[in-house]
Length: 585
Figure (cartoon, rainbow, N blue to C red):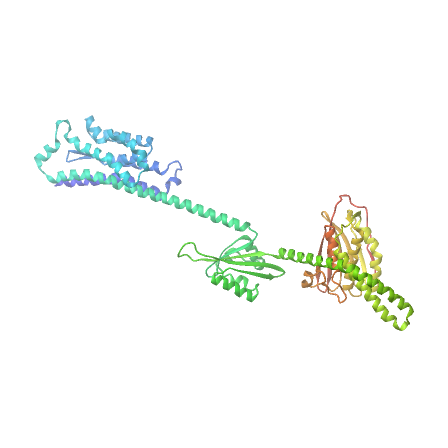
């Protein structure tokens, strides 16, 4: 009985030693030492090292059961290492197992050594290695058993070789069936352990591959998320994602800058998870805000146009349905600044109006001007023959005819599409020619004119008649907007490759709503105006490839800045050394 207990202990020790490579391999994978210690030592290489340690440990504790059968389960990690490893590592492991058998088996018989170490089956192991690596778990267990069964059979046959039947001699004397059962169980346990070891190696390795795949998927997902964020940041749209409750879950850079323009001290951390209603409630009309909130709640598409602080925004809301069942959806909110597009649309409307004006002017010029000339001529004759008591009436009729003729002339000037003939001139010369006329008008109104010309200005390609008309229109508009003692200033300067003409008055100024319609045909703030003067100025500037800008503040005055492209690099020698001023006396 004592011998049986000792044999069982020896078998358990062998099982522990043989399975030690599994624990080492599992520890290695859990700690991820492959990357922490040495990047050249991969998981397969460490498995070979663990198998070698297990083979060595089993050989150190090897013994014989009842003095009959060699007890060394190192054959299991040796075979598994050969099958899983490369040819070089498998050869090293097989030589190690053979060396351990020579060193610790305590046998002088070569045949016994060969059978206990299963050297004869090594070629079969190396031949099955490639097929083994590609097989399923069941196929791998089957291939291992193809080698392990004959190996254990060799170990069991060793006691009856050499003409000595140690089984018959031992059991014939003692007749102990328990010892025979222990020997049988040893062989059976070795075969079963081989399958168990393969299963655990596959499960462990499968978990490693799963982790690697999950890591790859995670990295790909992270990269796709970053790429999507970069795309949304590059797009010239303000984009915001919301959850099903309307809380902010993500924004791009354009949206963040838009929010910062209204809330300068806010950060992205402050914005995240906040209800979107808090950001838009103060800046959006109540009716529009209610529709937007309803669209987010009902997950319906909607589109709204919002005007805020002279900027025009187009807000688009679309639902984000969940792709995976059980996950919550949300909404996507896109804000596009349409201010420039609205300006372009307004300019196109102006073009259409100008086209209409041109058609009208072309149609009425001859039909109206000629009869008006005849009427005016006969009125002049009647005026000369009438008494002084009718003079005031004739004066009113003549002025109204002149006014009607002026409107027709404005129509013609605005509608003309002829090529503007330009010549290379100095802007200062044109201003000098007009100065006496402007001073005379200002003197009659009790106003003054200041002329501040740049000391060095390039010559420009200009149509002199049109530029004179431009300056007179803007100058007289400024005078009409000012009261007595008002100051009209004409100034020139060079800005990079452009020449700027600035006409400034100290009048009542223009409101923001009026500035938006300032160049629209027929829009006027004067009781006797036609609404075509500034439209005519704009068309003149555009024919010269220039731009005109208006800056005005109510109660302080208005500034018109006209910019012309400089076409020559030579600077004129026209020098103004003093400011010319005419004041009312």
